[in-house]
Image 1 (cartoon, one colour):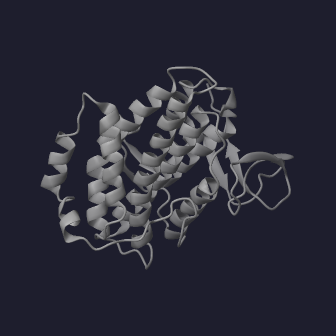
Image 2 (cartoon, one colour; image 1 turned 90 degrees about the vertical axis):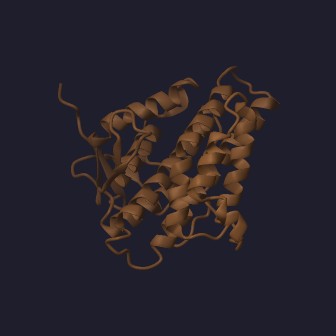
Image 3 (cartoon, one colour; image 1 turned 120 degrees about the horizontal axis):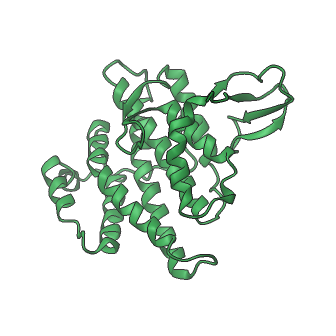
Length: 277
């Protein structure tokens, strides 16, 4: 996966002074000074910082470290913006639409940061020293794209073009590297504090297959988090499941979510095991 149509990496600029602001001490001070009493201002400041982070030239390891340092603040800010979206019902007013735009912009910029790391680390053969950072960057990119999908579901908006094909391509890249099942730390998990690329990919697949249009706004994230516990019941096959007229199909070369299709013999199939009770 050389490029992403949705996570477009902006032109990189050399700026030693700006690069220094992403050192550990400087970044810790910036995080500590975020105005907790004014989350709206904190969100705008965070968005501006992300704009600088994704445009300044820096080593992949340093960018990944900075993103991980900012991760807790990202969740706090994004969850606050999402909570603002669910305070009133539909139709949404102009204020909610602006909040939605800011939330999606922050989610996208944050995910672009991880994608730029993943792309840099996978441009050539991944060494054993790069294995863990590569898995972490890909897993975080899938999680970021998944968060964008959930936010759009919350607003009953269509999923932006190219997100699904990016998700499929990232999973295929991990399979090609032999790293799809490698676990990395994931503090955002509810039932486990470790998650693999495949776990994260299956989680968003299952949410889509659950026909989430019937959920209430506040239920989307709850259902998505619960799916983490049952994602192991989904097995991704490389060919249609024998004896099934209707397949749970993933068209990995298309910009489409998984769907139930008549067996054509030309799809990657997903088998959902029954849970024995």
